[in-house]
Length: 351
Image 1 (cartoon, rainbow, N blue to C red):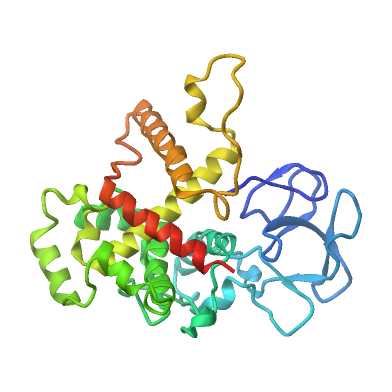
Image 2 (cartoon, rainbow, N blue to C red):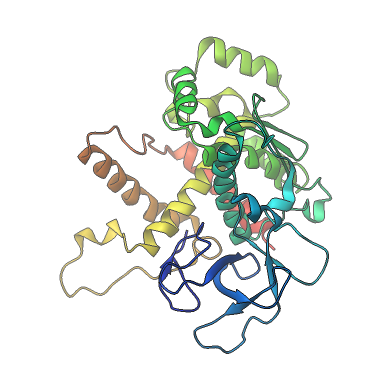
């Protein structure tokens, strides 16, 4: 994710911030411009006006905070025009946890932070949230406790108990997953949603099968065999994770999530000034790395050229703190081909 600045005083602010600590202005995320904007009251009834350091009124129109801001789970904005009270991200929610139960509000806040980052990436890619021209069901979330996390026909269910770090670690060890996070779950499940849009309804099913395999094989039987026997010892030769070897659908979803991890991390590293590729440059050498919008412009080959040294740097930093590798994956040629396929479909599906 890129680094944001307060539009009033230009101080650095962060994606979840609702107040600028430097100038005191309220902050909100504008999903139309994908920026954090400073706000000042524009009258009664919760109306706000966007503030710019240039005061050039380049973003006219009053706005409101999303209705879920009252719970402290959202800082996104809604245009005052129209009947919408929920932002683009919260409008996808069909079910939220029972907030009268102890700990559920805190869990929902954690879940929403992950979902907002997911939504940011989808908007940056230009991918539809409403089913798109393929006429698929709109993207929908059910956030409930003690549920089976998964996707079915546009509805993504997430067990909010995953917001508890102890429970998440227990499940990580139970399922032998190197890394497990709320954001990772959401990126995996959203992969199933966009398989429906971009592969099944997008006319790419035969190309998909030639790379990932035939998804028509028995899904439940494949999962049962995976949980009973585990992945094959040589799974890393073809997959980005052991779980990806369970079934072609899961291979796609794991690869999709992996692709989203890579793009987000590369953009964040660039925004923070981390560029491991520069380590071998001589003093006075011409800077050879032109910047591209990693979400819209950068080629897959360039993305990989940036990702590999960044991943190695992350592993080295993690070892410096006495931890295991941050990124315990070596991308094989087969897995690289799958990631490239995801890249092509994301670009083709962008609006």
